[in-house]
Every structure is written in C-alpha cells, then in structure tokens.
Length: 147
Ligand code: CA2
Image (cartoon, rainbow, N blue to C red; front, side, top):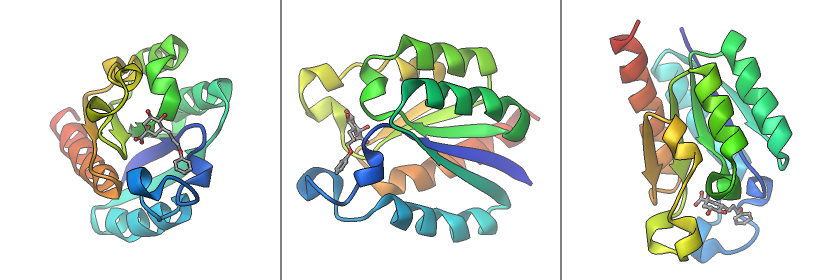
C-alpha cells in the first residue's frame, strides 16, 4: 500500500467560503471525501494535514519521512515566499507534487513564481480538485517506477 500525505497550506481551511469564482464552492472536507474512495481504488493510503503556519507545515513534511511514500502539497501563498518549505521538501527527499486550484500563471504576477515547486517532481495548476486526483496518479506512477 502506497502512503501519501496531502498537505494544504494557509487559508485553505476556509475553502468554499469566499471567492467561489476563483476557487469554487467546495470545501476541504469535500476534497477529502472525493479523494478517499479514489485512493482506495488505487491502493493508496491517504492522510490529510492542513495548517496556517509555516513551521507546522515543515514539521508535517519532516514527519512524512517516516510515515509517507509521497506528498501532495498545496502550500497556498507560502509557495511564493517560503524557501523554508522548499528546503524541507528537498531535505526529506520524498517525491512531491505541488497542486494549485487556480491557474497561478494567469493571475497576479506575484503568484507566477513558486519556490516550493522546485522541490517537487511536478506542479499541477488550474484544475481545481481534479489537480489532486491527477497528483495521486502521478505519484503512484513515480513511486512504482522508482521502487
Ligand atoms: O490556487 C491555489 O490553490 C493557491 O495555492 C491558493 C492560495 C493562493 O495564495 C495561491 O497563490 C494559489 C490561496 C488560498 C486561499 O484559500 C481560500 C480560502 C477561502 C476561500 C477561497 C480560497
């Protein structure tokens, strides 16, 4: 059984509660409910973590060293600022896929660059929840190829 840790960053706990034109009306709970059965079909054991705090996200990535085979991460705004989260991804060395609900390349210029994506094998942006589903498949493929 492949173990994947899904990490969502700051403000995503309020998903579905504002800016529905950008982020949709679904909540983080809805995302978990979508991913759970899909992961079972794929032989993947999922765990979910959300935090508004940079250090807590770093701790979760570090703990993944012992408890996960891969990481799906939406670092939210920390993507554009956090060399510390990038370093954590690199140090831990687990394959990670970065997901953004919105297409960050089509938004304000300060969202175009992501530090954290440089510690990831792939970035998927602009596909809303489908991006997380695609990330599951990407990681499963990658982990099989490299184990
Ligand atoms: O598109 C994404 O997934 C983002 O990572 C979302 C971040 C943003 O800072 C990134 O540039 C792109 C923002 C998350 C905001 O969370 C929400 C909370 C409540 C309602 C809607 C969004």
